Image (tube, rainbow, N blue to C red):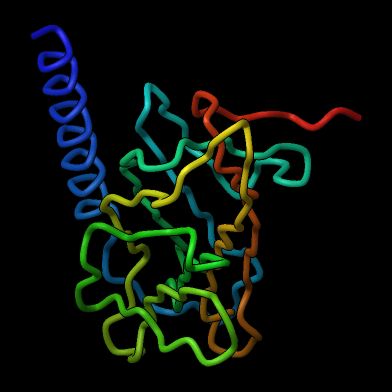
Length: 197
């Protein structure tokens, strides 16, 4: 009974968090005009909750110095968001290798999963296809898991790649931010593990 109550509390927390994030973006993701010049790259955040873990990664994190340990066959909730005051043009989440990952929540328009023609990578992308209705932000939320076993302390690794790009103003090239989060699938508790220097 206690596990059922804990499970219900976790589901309620995840639902409330998702609703708050969506409401925030509805108020913050406004129509905008592309400025004459824009030299600032977009910002992004990736929030993951599950297995008693709740953390938000941003473009300011030092991704080279840590890994995210996750459990196999455990559901995780995520919110991937990006913003740019001068207009957000594209954002993308790449998962490599795809065979170690299962997206539970279907991807809906305006998001799309692109066909994989270059190996074992899942590309989830949103692109502003018109400059007539430019937005300052976008987000994707849902659930995923890593459908495999981690027996005898064996682990597998995969990469989450995050990309966001703006219009670069009316005259400049697009400003981008690109980060890689190393994921380690193991039987240990979910958490951020910093590399020894």
